[in-house]
Amino acid sequence: MKCFNCGAELTASDYCSQCGADVSRYCRLFQTSNAYYNEGLEKARVRDLTGAVISLRQSLKINKKNTNARNLLGLVQFEMGEVVEALSQWIISKNFQKEDNLADYYINAVQKNPARLNTISTTIKKYNQSLFYCEQGSYDLAIIQLKKILSSNRNLLKGHELLALLYMKTDNYSRARAELETVLEIDRTNTRTLRYIKELDDAEGRHPHSRQAPVEEGQVSKDSIAYVSGNETIIQPVGVKDNSGLHSVINVAIGVAIGVAVMWFLIMPAQQQRKSAELNDAVAEYSDQVESKTAALESLQVEMDALEEEAEAAVQAAGEAAEKLASHEELLKAYRAFAEENPAGALERLEAVNQETLTEDGKVMYDSLFAQVGEEAVKELYQTGYNAYRAKEYETAIENLKKCYDLDSEQRDALYFLARSYHGAGDTENAKIYYQKVIDEMPGTRAASDSAKFMAGLE
Image 1 (cartoon, rainbow, N blue to C red):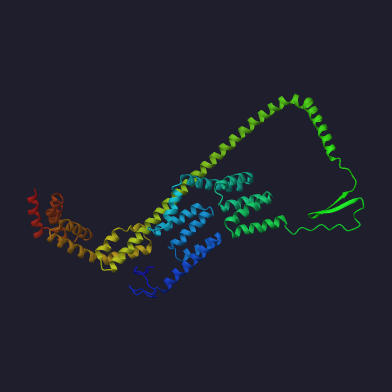
Image 2 (image 1 turned 90 degrees about the vertical axis):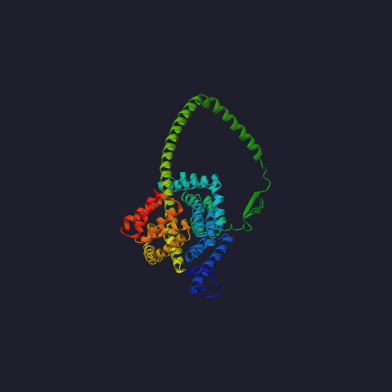
C-alpha cells in the first residue's frame, strides 16, 4: 500500500515514514474494502451470486481501485449472463492496474472468441426484442424469443426470470417454476427469484393435500374384496368374470368397419377439393409470413442502428474519460516533481497536460502550479543550456535554450546563445533565422552587431 500524499510504501505505523502524514484512517478504509471483498469471495464460492454482487459493490464504493474486487465482480456478472457489465468492470480494472492484472486474461478470453462475441451481441438484441414484444402484449412471440436466447446463453438470469413471468401470465405454472428453479441452481439466494416463487405458490394455492378417509367395516359387502393402493381404497366384486378383452376386440373391429365406410363414401370424393383449399391457405399463410418477417427485419434494423449509435457514444465517452484520467495523472506527476525541487521536470509534465480535459479544481491547480514553476524553470533551462553551449554540447544547449526562450520571450541572452548553438552545430538555416531575431529584437546591442557579423560569414 502506498501513501496517498507522497506515494511512498507504507509500513505498519499509523504515519508515513516518508512525509509523516497520518494514514491510519486511510489504512482502515483499505482494510474495510478488502473485508467486503473477502465476504463477496466467500458468497461467490457457495453460489450466493446476488449477495456477492452486493458485497463487492460495497468494497468498490470504499476503494474504487480495488482491482481484485472489480475483477471478481466481473466474473460474478459473467456467471449471471451479464457479459457486457463484466467486460466493463474488467476494462476499468485494467485502466487502474496496467501490469499483472487478471483482467487482461479475462478480456482476451472473450475477445479472442468471435463466435462468443457474436452470440453476446445477438443475445442483447433478442432480449430487447422480447421486452418490446412484452410491451406490445405479444407474449407468445416473447416466449419464443426468450427460449432462443436461453438455448445459447443458459446463465442469463434475467432471461429466465422474464420467461417465468410470461409463463405465470399465461397460467403455465409448472414451466414458470422450472425456469425459477434454474435460476436458483446458478444463484441460490436470488431475492427476486425467491419472491417470484412465493407469488407462484400463492397463485397455485399450494397446501397439504387432505387424505381420503379409510373405509369402515360394514361398508364393504361380502361379495366384494377391498384393498388399499397408495392413498386409495379399491373395492372389487368377487366372482365376476372380466370380459374386457373380448369387448375391446369387438369394438376395434366395429371401428375399422365404420372407418372404411366413411373413407369410401365421404373422404375420397372430397379429398381433391380439400387439397386445393389447403394449397390456397398455404399460399396465403406464406404471404402473411413474408410480410411479418419484412416488418420484423425493418424493426430490427432500426434497433440495430440505435444500438450502434449507443455503442459509438459509449466508446467516445470511454475515450474522453481515459484522456481526463491521463491529464490528471500528469498534473499529479508535475506536482510531485515540483515538490521534489525539480522545476524543469514539473514543467515538462505540465506541457503534457491537456487543459481542456481538466475539471475546475484541476485548472485552478494547474494555473497555480504553472505560476510557481515557470520562473524557476526558465532560470534552470537557461543555465543548463548556457553550460552546455560552453561545453560545446550543442544539441543539449539547443533543446534547453529553445524551451527557455519559448517560455519567456524576454530572455534575450537565451535567444543569442540559441543562435550561436545552431551555428556551432552546423545548422546554418536555423542559425540565420535566430541571428536575424537577435538583430530585430536587440538593435544597437553588441549581441546584434556580433550576430550580423556571424550571419554575414554564413553567406
